[in-house]
Image (tube, rainbow, N blue to C red; front, side, top):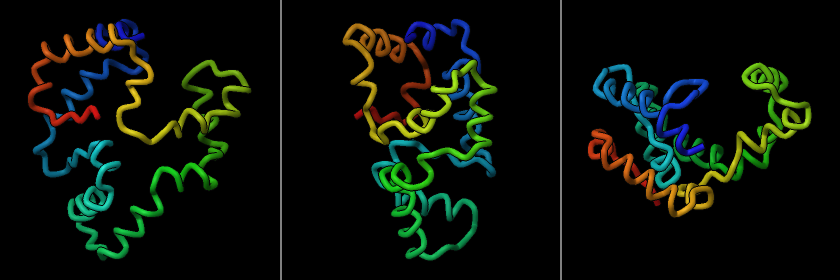
Length: 149
């Protein structure tokens, strides 16, 4: 799977690194705000405040705090959002040839752990070394502020 990810072998929705490169090239456009998952996890209030400023919505600091609290991963997972809406199930069924059992448990795929660094639980040492080799050769790896935790 990692080789497919790194070497662009038959990826249904396109190569991840092509997407990253394209979005990074737009980072200075006035209508683009790049938000990193790691920043949302480490400092959700600041991240939401950045979105607030970018959108020009002028929401209060109290509302930004409330949004950060309400959208905390654990709260979203435990609430009604853990059972996806019927239209979401339908969209997932169109994306892949999912069995009914897979569709019933789709919320487990949408809400995984909400943690940074879960890759450590999925990659072997050899796979991690292969990924590091790839990143060492990828020019943008020195420009983009990746957080690996």
